[in-house]
Image 1 (cartoon, rainbow, N blue to C red):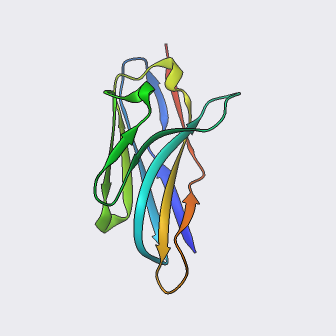
Image 2: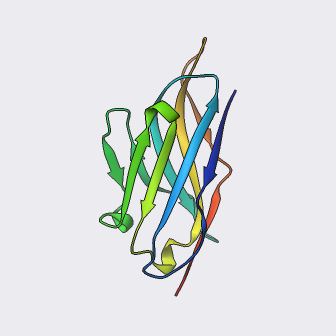
Length: 121
C-alpha cells in the first residue's frame, strides 16, 4: 500500500507565495509521473502541473510562469512552488503519483487527501 501526504497549504495574500510538498510512503519500487491537481469550490478537478522521472514538466496555461514543479526521487517527494498567487488559485490541491509497487503488480495512480490553499485579495 502507498500513502501520499501533502503539506504546505494555508492562507496567503494575493501576490504571495506558497510551497506545497507531497511525500509518498509505503511499498514503492519507483515513481514515474508525479503531479498536482486542484479543485476550486463548485468546479471540477483540474491539472496544475506534472513532472516525469526524467524531469519533463507540464503546466496548465493558467499557472505558467508563476508555478514550478520539482521532485526529489530519493525522498519520493514532489513540490509545487507557487508564486504571484491570485484569488483564482484558491482551491484544494491534490498530489498524484503513478507508483510501481515494490514486489509485484502494475503501476497504479495514488492520490493525496488534499491541502487547502486560500488566496485573499
